[in-house]
Length: 440
Image (cartoon, rainbow, N blue to C red):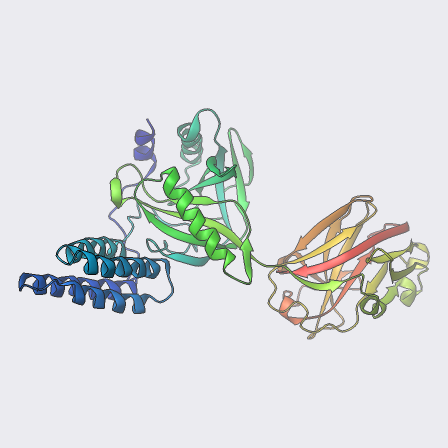
């Protein structure tokens, strides 16, 4: 049944090559020549092992540090041992292994439909690649008792009813429990992220995914549990070896082919979301750092709000006070001393805090426009520690309560000061405890 569903949903088109995969193509050419020379040497009475090993080493150098390069290293080492122990058969074994490698190096996935807007090309087979995805829209269905077939029918009905073109790949989310990977959700990706509206749509959910980075491995053949688990292990080990990255979510599989593409011609990617490791920008328990922060209340405009900030014995910064709406007042704020470059290279910042149930804003000031406060609102939970994350797009340029439409968007790289403000007609006492600010 699932085969018939794919046949209905996928538009079978002429295979679309993913382009020249140099240096993969060059490495494949080197291996092909080495196998040919080795075969000739063997026909002439030699073992043929030497030219194949030499060609494999050259291909390895072309590929540099890579998963398929590591595979060549293992094959060459095994070939040399076989040459010492079984000289008559070693070159036949090595030739078979190198032909399999060439098949992967030459492999071009069959793309049976268009990629969504801005999507990167598929990752080469056996390679591990760090790549960025744009924001995109998808329609998803959880996998219940009906399994992937039931989810597919729901998704297919949705795109058919709403006249939405099928794209490739199909996204399958996984969860890991006690070392066992299990399918959790299937999603069809919209070609255009502006198509339709997000929200519940009958039996499926239309949702937006933020732009982000993944580490991806290209794979051939059927998506077996063993193959997925092995690829997931390769990816997490690779991430563990990167000093500035960490795993940022559950594994997913991007499947590119319908059942019309069979066996070893099938292609899929195993992917793991990654994040830049968090780096602390500010510890509010640092008394010296907090002492450089300045109170700026509505008193500068004649208002009567009051506030203060200090470091606590618990290693936090406590910002407390009272907001008064009298005499056209209505805000209390605190602002750091100069911190140029404090958020350089960040794609996200996270503030850990404990509030009082009121709304606050994180403010940022740039080197270029020091009088303009870029603001992002956030809600607090009474007496509960939370972590609030922000991206550049969350901040709006403000001056004296007015939005400045002619200002450039915030760049974390240009931030020179930080601040917190309470306003928006919230009167009375307030209390917010700040623990740390981190960047990724």
